[in-house]
Length: 514
Image 1: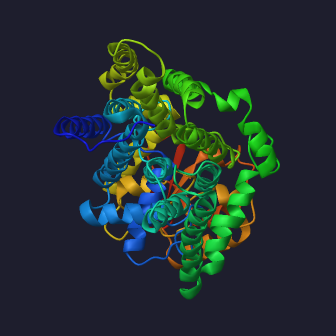
Image 2: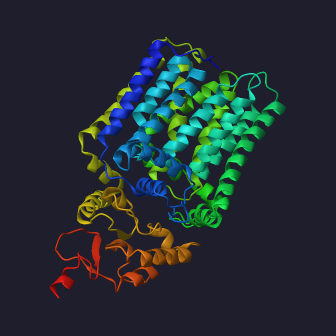
Image 3: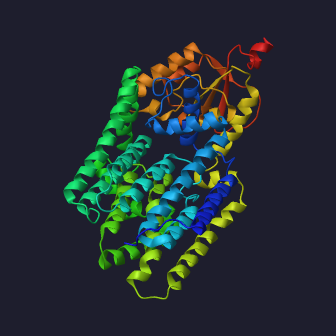
């Protein structure tokens, strides 16, 4: 293991330049139509700041960390693309620094800089949907720093270091519980191969400290929702619904165990969306194989545990969305940095050879990425998701202009960007259709939504026609809306959206004609 040295002025300048590169690259898609997970979290956070309660009023099936993160950003710059951009860049730069310190632990300063450079170039990969802040970007920011603290540990690590590691693992799990998988495997690796000078018994105590912090964090979260009277809402959303979600998937899995089996099949372990990361993976594997046979294997065992844990985290939900695979990126960039930084100490080669290999990889990555920055941000959304979110953004802005202050609309669909773009609050916090269609919370959520709409009838009712299943669907919310709303006059094409207005409202042209 190469002993890490303090960053020099040159290293600080390079890291600052890479951070600027990340910020500039994200600016290109500042106004990109956002996908539903991001807009849901932003809208929920905004409503929380206005006094509505998470889970009890505003429903989501993610733990609270992502909503709190968005809320902090909205407090700083307001609801809109600026708040999303802020947390996007902050998470990516935090991970950049973590990758550097983790990669420098084995590869020295050069390995750290190569790892950081690779991260800066691939962390916004379009095909992994990585240029916008899904929950994975925050998980990566937590896990990479926990990994860096573990891999840089020597002797008997101070208790405070293990408490920080435990806090980082706990925070990652509060973004998504699947983050527990890499945390558990990294903790196990710490016990199997303790730092030099640290007894295995002491390493086991470290793991107890790490686990204790995680337990305290989750107990405190449970306690909070119990104290405010929303424990049942929290449990049903984050645990009952997610259990249903994980075993109702296109892969046909019926349990977490079968999810893991599917997750380690060749097609799900190496999907086409990871193609741009393949050179990093090969470099990491080559360096890992040499490092494991040439000296103490603790560092490489930690990296292997991180990688396996990342794939377990990808597999646990039973869904294989491209952005899930972002969890692989810190591990691969660190491994590539280790390989380039330490290869010269393993094999006798001229000093310039590893750097030439790294430069060649940078050129390859730039050739893959740069052409994408010549197309507009709407094209990025279309390449990732099709035209739905582009149409959603346009309609959301139209609704913002059409509706007056205090007027609301409700959408039967999952396009929460309509609320994000229009800046109009949803009349019901049950504004996401999928849990209304099936699962353990469908019936109580439908009753809640109908009650919300009855108390605060929206001026408009927007329907995503794709969620009507050819008109065959009968649902309590649609039954409630049917006699109360008529189609908006005009021939503007909003496909797949159908715009309805409340009978007798100022937008109901038919009532004015009478």
